[in-house]
Image (cartoon, rainbow, N blue to C red; front, side, top):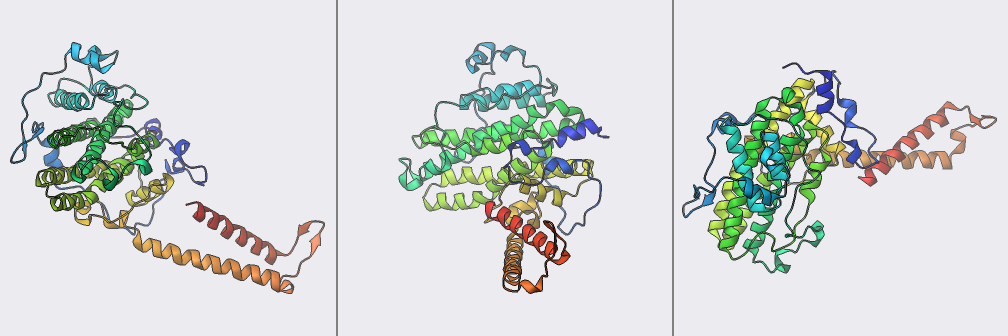
Length: 419
């Protein structure tokens, strides 16, 4: 597929309006760079299971049975009467995947959101609707509960009235609910460039949304079995903020949502499973284990499309990924689930910067020592830099060079301190 300049520019619209002001560079400067870069990192690869995941039938196992996932009783499809409960003026005119996605985003009730998400994906898989094009709402509709607070205000398991297993499950349910909206926002927001991206892009992210709605349904069911419900404790809104920061760029969205946020789920999954087993809740641990296993496909979708877009742009994927995360101030923290990330196609040296951290510390120390040496030399040995003036203009080239180097080092140290 040949990309037109206008379409490429849309794909790489700068995200800098949402970035911190101290950042000196803008990713928009990378949009049409065609020069080659030295690739010293491992090449990413597509997950071997991705073709099978794409060909798989719609998963109707939306209930967690005694032995694991099982098909739930058939629920009535959304009718015009039901849709009016979602407070959307255009319920009766949803005739495309993008319009159904916008409806999901505009639905506040979590259970209805999950059901609508599944129904929309089934419509798409049955070939009944085109991709279409529309605009997403400014932010997804949310129920009155849970209250959205800052991360510092989220009660710890020790300070929560929910037992530890329910506390873990509630947090996971909140993540899955956000994941539904994140996937649909990607479908809807970039539906205007569907001719450039192709139908598979939208099919993949609608599929991800359907998986997330099934995961959320399992969490809701298990919370109910434990005597609780979604909304019984506060939650944060950080996941959606990351979505907003990448709203202007397809490639930034792919890098931050599937390849960072979803990948963090791969890291946390085994630890949560072990914790739940230790708490004696094997049923919940099995649910979390299955969710973590299925998240590999979602990370793999991100890797696949990141490689595809970079290839169309003529960019080196590893360098582009690093530059995007630096531009967006996204921090990658371990411990990492190397096996799961590798299976999903993410090379270790793309995200594990532990060795780079040591090098940066050494460089920082070298710069500090060099600055102190030059200042001491300039202040204590003034004869080392003979000065002559013509009016107020310094004519000594050695002193000008010192000033320039000092200014550069001070500026770099200031940026490092802000980071």
